[in-house]
Image (tube, rainbow, N blue to C red; front, top):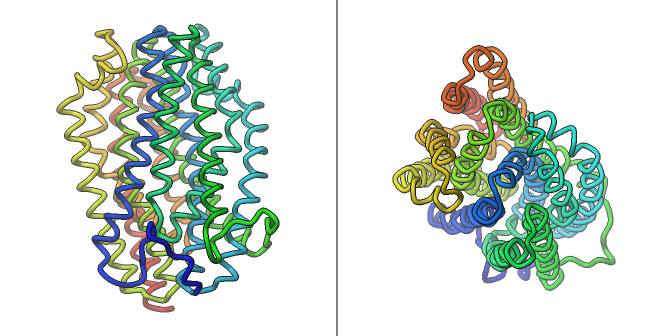
Length: 452
């Protein structure tokens, strides 16, 4: 394989100790996700502090929908990660080059398609989650503005997946730090300096997304070897695209289904009043922070197993699963505990209204105590994607999360319309989905590792 493929930011996943490399690779991913959520939370914090509770509810009502779209983007991009990681493990430079250019061109086309579809469905999506009429105009404006940045979001996610497939999780983090700080500065400037509301924070986010995409594409253009991006070579390789879609779309669907189930829960929350919506929105921010800790080790499992499976090193694949599972549980549980201990001070960053803080605390207690359980299915699903199974984890997630949560909303919550009752479904679905996913993983991995 071309020696120019690896640079100082990359990690050799095919040889040497695994645990230390997994941690070095995963921590920037965790920081990337957490910082992304914190910078996104700047939208919530700025409108909550300097606008009003209606603007806070408008931004908060969009959280499940925005996360749904982001899950689709990240999941689809993961298909490119697996395809390129397998090619790196196999030492196939030609396939690496074709995969890079196929992935980038596909992301550009898909991004504009998603923007158009999203603009059409923005109104129906917000109605689906029962956004109150008093909040709807600002919520719709915020969502439609954010959707304009879809092509740049998708392009960034695909380009970042390409870098991560060869072991570089640091430079996407550096880009996020820069553009995230810019986002916060623009948020404050537009809301305070120009007296804007949800439109100001949306414009700030779009600007940050555009700049992120430009920087990361510039990095790929300056790479050496088979990973280098050359616009003249942009083309679609049919077989590679099929593999990217075969792995990426189910992964995206899995993330979307998970987000869709949250959207359905949000529809229940939206019937309980503005204070509950605002409080739940504030509490959700911290759940996403902890989720990205889990997701970091899930992406790590996919990439490390992708390369080692491509190289036929199955013993290392099994160790990757074990190390990422343990690390995910420890990091998520640590964050859960710290956030709960300092919840009052943290919530004051977003609101000073006592009722909003009370409902946020209720959500945090019901969810964060058990959130580490989500590692069981996230790591298992990610490991299966690394060796080519993507549809099966998606189907398990659809049953374990979406079906169960929909049933809970319509069969339980409809009879006992309590915020606490609605929150109880989170640990229930984590246990159900985790048990099924672990069972499926051990069956599939045995087939792949022992009979190949």
